[in-house]
Amino acid sequence: MITGRWGKPSDVLLDLVVEADGVVRGVANPGRQNAPIRRGHFDAISGLITLEGEHVGQDGTTLPFRIAGRLDGRTLRLTYEYGDMRGKTDVVRVEEYTPPPLTVGDRLKSRIAGLKRRINARSRPTGEENARTLRERGESLDSITFRDAVGADIPALAELHVTTWNATYNTARGPTIATRIWQWNQVFAKENRRDFVLVLEDRTGRLIGFTWGRPHEGEFEGELSKIYLRWEYHGLGLGRRMMAETARRFLERGIHSFILFAELSNPTLGFYDRMRGERLLDDRGQFGGAYGWRDVRTLVR
Image 1 (cartoon, helix red, strand yellow):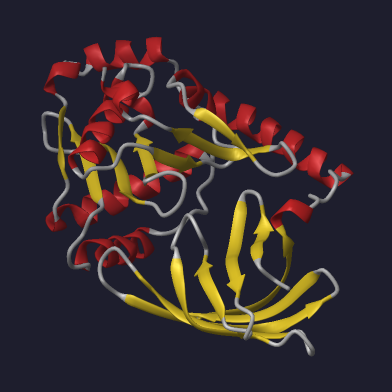
Image 2 (tube, rainbow, N blue to C red):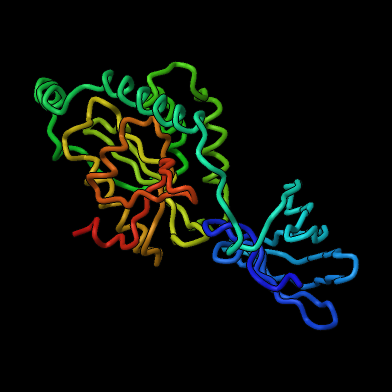
């Protein structure tokens, strides 16, 4: 029988119960989407299984899915259609999952990312340098304001996104401003939005930083999808204020925890550690750049 949870401990794909007549009940992506199976059947003789249902998003949109395959020994070999996504996957019962061993390539990847992170950090000015140039410009931290972004901010937001992303990863080959404008237009065009974009602007109205928070399905209720600050403002305490203001906006939306996914080559990882983000490990006990805050109120205090 196939009653049980299928996938791996950190990513359960199916939670199934099979009745005596072969009817299958349960959910797909439990703990995240919790998409109910409306029609399901398992043939114990042939091992064939079919599952159909739909996931209703937080904005009310419906995403149908269909999963079909067969039980091969102790492995479910499946094909799936989940909205526009199509593919194949093999899954085992969660309690029987054994993560693949670390390879030499895995270890090298982590070391290379660490080297890139140190190289990228060298191009960033120090807090002392930024404080001095701030004074030379006749600017003060008190003149920097925080507010929620609006549609009219999209061109400036796109320029800021490109500039800060390129500076973070020490490159000039990131997405273009035109690409970012298109992406941000998609965000702001959605109806019944539960996400938010927080921006910082200087005394002239120039955007110098932003965060983007949105709901997340799974163990954490929210996701801090983007957080960037122009490098000439790093080391001045603005990052902590950005995290605090972001936490307040999550709380306003009834979201009490959030996750953040960072690249291992991002020189800002140390900042997330100082903000007491929990390093989230994968099934092999490895850190891949994901941080979690289980109580956002700790960032507001």
